[in-house]
Length: 183
Image 1 (tube, rainbow, N blue to C red):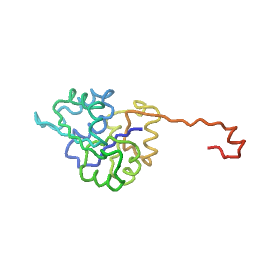
Image 2: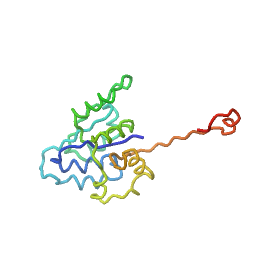
Image 3: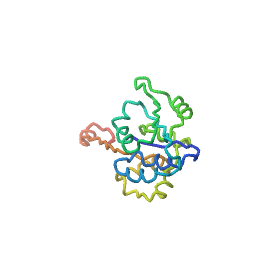
Image 4: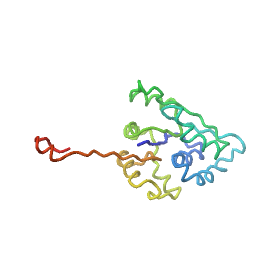
């Protein structure tokens, strides 16, 4: 499952709070984001900046970049590669160090880091934002919110725009024949 989480940051950018929650769901909540972002900080024509951390920059354009730049031309998006070398991935300590150095507003990644980052207090609980924006769990993929809460020890630190289920099929009779405990 691809998870999108938000970093804890000072609350000096009120428009970023809305963006961090809704960016993973741009196709569904694009209009809400536009309404939320317009006039949120009264900055006039100054470009607003959002820093997005992701494994590598190449996936951004096809996943979100084109839509985001078309829908929000006044936003300046800065991409930070969190772990670009998939052949030599960062250790957990290196990843966390880079996260603390770069301080992205939005973190796009896989759930391999989610539990640890949530447990270490590096992610913001999104539950209050769901309530503030009057979003319902039923607006999301069935079971996704529950899984993310379970993985976050009760807190909701990320939402996922995709959901992928896996299943293992096995021949129980074969296991029993050879005295192997069923998985």
